[in-house]
Image (cartoon, rainbow, N blue to C red; front, side):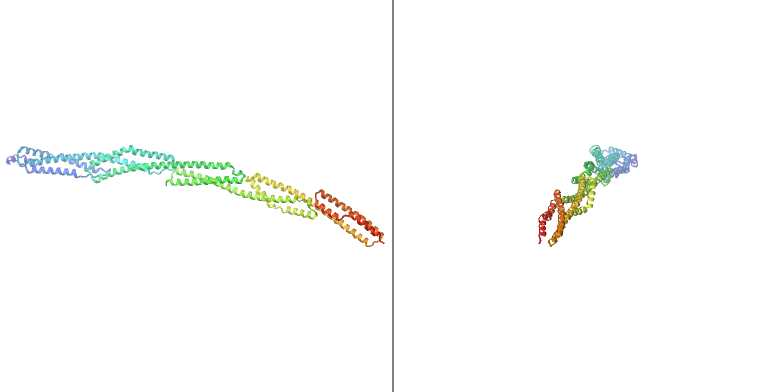
Amino acid sequence: EEISAHHHSPDEKDAQSPIRPQPKLLDAIDVLDSWLSKAKNLVLNHRLDFSAGNYDALEENLKQFRDLEKDMLEKDNYNYITNSVQELLNSTPVAPWKSSIEKKLQNLKENWIETNSMLKSRIEKLEKLQQTLPQLYDDLSQLSNWLRDANAFLNSDIAFGDTNALETQIQQCNSVLSNCEQTYKNNLNSVNKKGNEIIAEIDSFVSEECKKQLESRLRELNSNWNGLQQTAKHRRQLLEETLRKSEDIAEVIREMESSIISIEREFDEIGIASMSDLKAQESVLRTFADKIKFKGKQIEELKSVIRINSSQKSSSSLADMNQRVALIEGNLKTLRDKVEDALRVNKQNAVKYREFNHLLNLEKDWLDKLERKMKRSPQSAADAEEISDSLDDLENFLRHRPVDRCERLKALGDELIAATVFADTVKQNLEFITNRWLNLSRQAKSMQNELEATMSEAQQCERQVLSVHSGLNQIDSKVQVLLDGVEEPEASKEMEQIEVEYKNQEEALNALRSCVERYRLQERHEAASRLEEQLKLLNVSEYRETFLPSLLAHIFCKP
């Protein structure tokens, strides 16, 4: 204003000739040009610094440049100075300073236009950034949150063993991949495009740190995006493999449950206890034991697979699977105990059956010996002594019959019959042994009576033989007395007595001869032959017919 007032002073115009620009006008040009240069340098050199979610610096910077623009537009001296200088130049066709002033004026105008343009551009960019940057960070946050949620799902526990849950997880995994490749892929491309555009626009007026921060956010987003895709693909592959294993394990569990039920039903239906053949029973039990052992190995393998594939955290599906396996294992153990008990009983019954057969054979041998003893007929005995020996032998044999063996045999037979071990055979053998003993004992009793009667008869015959022999010896003694010289009257009397005794002995011998015939009828040939030999030695008839007449002639013919 001071320069303007001085410039338009009439006194000054009249006082100076030729016209020259006032120093204060030139200073005003320099001052304005300097201010514009500072404003331009501020636009060029100022670097905006902000962080996500905190846009105060952006607001402050925008206000600063708007105020600067307002100050610039409110500077009226620019128009006044340029008009004044232009008037001065127009009014002075030729002057040595004219080119210099023109150049200054031109520089001032260019500087003004450039600074004004830079301010407008910066304000427009800041205003645009004020709108796009929050939206970009919101989009970044939304995508980051979605990636975080998706990663949380992808890193969640796999529902091993739960086929329905696994199928749901596979569907969710496919949904994540679908979103990555379609829906959210467009959002990612949009964010990348906006981010790159913003980075390109703010490259000249934003701090390097803010720029790197935004670039880092974009790189992190894209890296997480690519990582999510890889994780989702790997997760889907793992879920599909886990589903296949879970289905296989579920199928194995179902098969084992059905198999255990089938084995139990087969074991109950086969009626092990009713099988009388011990070897066949043992063979069947061994087959069941092998089946159970094989199933036990399968259960251990199944438990190992479940343990390897299950996660650290327990789940209801895994607990249910383990519970079913434990139930199968318990049922298998119960069945194993049944089979082992049956095998133990089978072994005990086999021992009992062997003992039964051993005792049975001993009893049969004893009865055979008894039968052989009874087959030795008393008719084969030659005399009473042999008959007595046979009787004593039979009585001793019967007396020493092992009663405890018979009792043990009966007890074993009852146990085997109760256990249905060869029940019919055991029962038949017991009945056979019992009946045979009853028959043989009756026969033995009858034979004892017969032996006793036969022995009594033999003893009587032997006494008669001895009596005849004794009688004959007495007759011999009497005859010897007669030969020694007995008087005739006495000799006649003695001879009559001798004749009577001979008759008596003859009758006794006839009775013994009837015994011989009776022995032959009884087929006691040995006894008959021996008695007959004895009777030949005691032939009284021959003695009477030959010796007695000679004796009489000798007695009565003596001088």
